[in-house]
Each structure stands twice: as C-alpha cells, then as structure tokens.
Length: 460
Ligand code: UDP
Image (cartoon, rainbow, N blue to C red; front, side, top):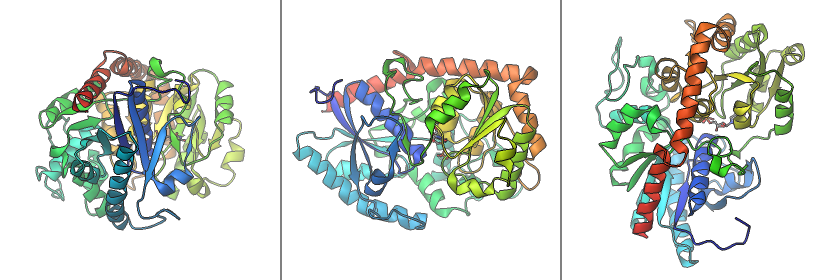
C-alpha cells in the first residue's frame, strides 16, 4: 500500500511485547501479518527503547510508546524485580493514557495483544472495556511446564534424585530438560516469578495466542487448548522467507545491535553450498570464559568454515589471536541478519543456544542444529530439537557443564555429513515444509489468525 493511502481497517490491535529482542521480533512479525490481513496493528514499546532501536529495513510499522519509568537512561542494571514492578506501575498508567488518546483521536483499539511475560495490560484493557489477547513467545511445551508449576501440579524445588518428569502432552523430561528457572528455581527469583506469573490472569483473556504451529507441538497444543481458547499463530518468521504473500517486506526485526548485513551476506555468497556452520547465542546469553575458549578452538578444529556472532559485550572472551589466525576459514561479527543468514544456501548447520526464535527460525528454514543450550527455556528446546523433531544434536557437556572443543567438532561434522547428518537433514526439510504449510493460505496458523480477526470484527 502506498504511503498516505487511506485504508478501511477491519479492526485495531495494540501489540505490546516485553522489551527485549527475542520478544519484539516475533510480535513485530505478528503485527505485520495482521496488517497484511487488513487489521491495523500498532506496536508499543518503552520510550527509552524506541529511541535506541534500529529496524532492519525501512520503517513501515506503526509504533507508539509508553513508559517503564526509565525513559531517559534506560533500566541499566536495575534489579529485574524492581524493574518489573516499576514497569507494571508506570506502564499501566501510561498504557491507559495511550488507549484513551487513540480512542479520542478516532482510532480506538479493539484488542490489546500483550506479551505473556507481562499480564498487567489485560487489567488495563478490561477497565476500558477492550478485549485482551495474551501472546506467548515461547514454545507450548515450555508454557505447559510453567503452567504446571503455577497450578502447584509440579512441586518445586524438585526432590534430590528426582527422576523423569511426566506432564500431559510432553515427552518424559529429565530434570535437566526443564527450563532452568524451574530446575533451579531459586537462582533467578524475579524471572521465576515472571514466568510462572504468566498464568496469573490467563483465564480472563479473550484469546491465548502462541508463536508456534500446530503440527510442531500437536499433543501439547491439544491438551492446552482444552484449558483456554488457545490458538497457534506461528511461525511469524519474516514473511519474505516463509510467507510468500509478504515477500517484499524487509522490516522483520527490531535490532538493538548494529550489523554490517552486506558484509555477512557477501562473505556467504563466496562460500560453497552447505559448507558453513553459523554460530550464535542470541541477544542475552553470556558464555563462561572457558566455554567461549573451547568454542573457539572447536571451530578452529572443525572441517567446516564458520560465521560466528560474538556480541560486543562478549568480545573480550574470544582467545587472543583467534580471529587473525582463522581469518581464512571464519568470519566473526558482532551481529548479523540472522534470518538472511539461515536462509542462505552456504549455511549447513546452526550452532545455537536454542532461544525459541532461533529454534523456530532454523526449523522453518530447514537448517540442522547443534544445540548448546544456556539457560531459561533453551534446554527444553534442545530436548525437542534432538529427540522429538530430530533436527539436530545436543552437544554433551563435561562434569563442569562445558562443551569441549573435540565434542563441538564432532557434533558439527555429525549434522553436516554422515548417516546421522542425512537423517537430520531429511527431517529439517520435512519441518521446513510443514512450517510453510502452516502459514500458507488455509494452513493451521493462517486459519487461526483469520478466526481471530473474524471474532475481532464481530466484537468491534
Ligand atoms: N538475531 C539476529 N542476529 C544475530 C543474532 C540473533 O537477528 O546476530 C535475532 C534472531 O533472528 C532472533 C533473535 O535475535 O529473532 C534472538 O531471539 P532468541 O529467542 O533466539 O534468543 P534470545 O536473544 O531471546 O536469547
């Protein structure tokens, strides 16, 4: 649609992600999908983040801001508990003001789509008579684990020597397959409360939306859909890669990190098909010095060339001389256009921390994975990658929890070549096709989004 052209929108959704990369990306992508289907979608973030973020393309999304109480200098190293409380308090007030402003300016909001990490926008919406849809940005399997903790159905802390854990719709899990905030429920109390608290008012939400697709998590989705009006709407992967109908839209990520996209892609263009191990640990994970060193030496030992994302804050952990020494076979960058990289034919595997977005992106683009989960939901995702979807291997750790260099070398070659690799690559292609079907017209996620929109229209 040309800028300035008037459009009769079917409804108006305000989309409110938790302010971090891994939450803003999928919710931006969901907003784009809604917009494409004729629903006006306005994204909301904090005033501070709005000033600092860069999008990866032309800015076509509509943004509004609210306050988290840290408008001028950001939250810095404010304790998470304090930050979340302040955001709740100041955010509720400024969100209500925003909703009223939009109503008075002739574009009233029909539904607030809010991140499950922050349940309070539902209360704000309700007070103003507006519908609310909670949006889960993690897998349904992981959500189900937190749900059981919330309802007291999974007792924590786990008893010493606790063996396998059986939850409906999930494969048997070892304690170490559980999200780290559950397994180790005392180490990050603020995150623990936030994640378990996702279910505090979910019963009151008009919709429960999840960034996954039915075929990927069939059993757990069926089980959870008995509790709420749960609908899978993913993967919200950049449309130009997955959803053909939006193929010219370049703005699919919000980036807090600068990246030389052209240099990365040019480097990949010069490499043979399937020859590169792409390595990234997302936007938050911090590796122990020893792990970083082993990772570096493992990449040097590997037969494959590599593209390694080391965020600026992690750069000092790269062994001295490594970059110069390996410049023939590897490129180290501080950030990259991950989707374009995963979609590039030179990439043969993804050494990943298994953040849910990275997992879903690799699955949807058919890239086999070497899983090195760090914390949060990543271990559960790694379990699924290896044992359920069979699209990768989980790199074993030693007694100190470190993946050693020989192990990494072995895992990379296992997924890129040989019998196991062939099987994994076949499965990766299968999931890629299923993901595409889910979002194509009439696919499971596409139908769910259409149903959501139809109900919204009837409400408005
Ligand atoms: N990402 C990116 N460039 C990079 C590394 C990551 O664009 O160099 C994006 C990636 O595509 C994903 C998000 O950042 O959408 C990371 O989300 P994820 O859930 O995987 O991990 P988190 O950062 O939340 O731990």
